[in-house]
Length: 212
Image (cartoon, rainbow, N blue to C red; front, side, top):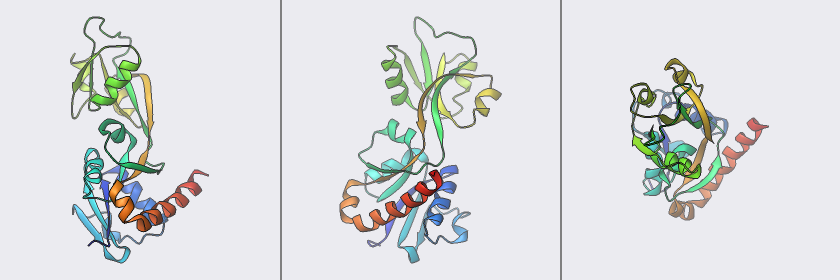
């Protein structure tokens, strides 16, 4: 399997858009690839192996070398700060990180609290604003936190904004735009530079055309 290039991919929306991008780049991925429930998918004719993982885990797999390259959201890369190289902005799964909360409410002056699944990003952002806040780490249903009084604000990913609106929240500040990036393990980049450079070249050509 050493001649295979192993790619870690997040499940869900990013996976679907990344597969479409790879196909446009000329990689022949079988039709059943889209609907498979397997966590490891081999495409021998392209010398590719895919590992399907949770979005937050992709950079970890790449950093530790079980995957040569990976596709990860910029939000994950900012939060995790893994030892990987970022090779290409794939311009897919566009969204952004934002501060939100209940409308017409101020931050608590004494002990402001911010709920998020991005504690490092949130802490860095508020520190840059000169605000000292208590960060509350949550793994899901972040919008619930201000509604039940757990926090003054949340920091979360916004795609369409529909979930926030349906839960009565408003956006206060936009922190950073997010797209999916192609990342690589530093050692793999030296050992499999030919395969990786070819992948980057083919994906770059597709991204450049679609952006134009």
